[in-house]
Length: 169
Image (cartoon, rainbow, N blue to C red; front, side, top):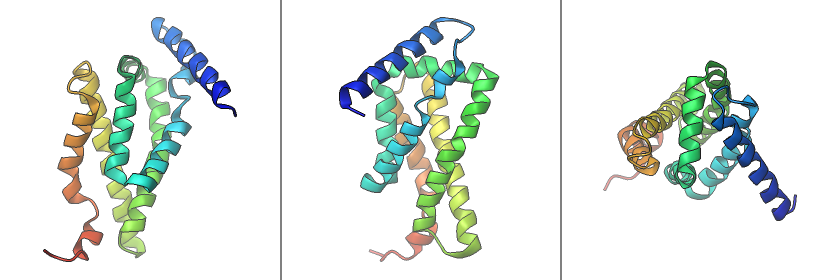
């Protein structure tokens, strides 16, 4: 797809989302999560290129760039049971992405699989927790700061197997 055509489609989607957010009944629910595949793909590319921490920060910066729209969107998702349930279903894509990353860095075997899945769950919970605090605070502190705080708390629990094999200084 050409860049201009893609930009026009993106702008039309954004305008439709704005209209849906302006109405209490919400309009077309599919608008609220339409960009999910693009977000997952972008996060995967960022993890491969820059690592997990930087990828999470990049996602937070992306959301912060369009703060007002994201805050209203997340508020509506949280307030609408069907949207909240659909987002939870879509979160399985993030869990698989994160678990795959941790499997590449973790222990082999069934224990390694379990640990990778637990690490993925912990990471997603930390990111969603940062989002909730961001919405609750009306955009303050900024999302990248909240994500950094969440990762700083979580990081000692991640990559345990790989960390045991790093040279000690």
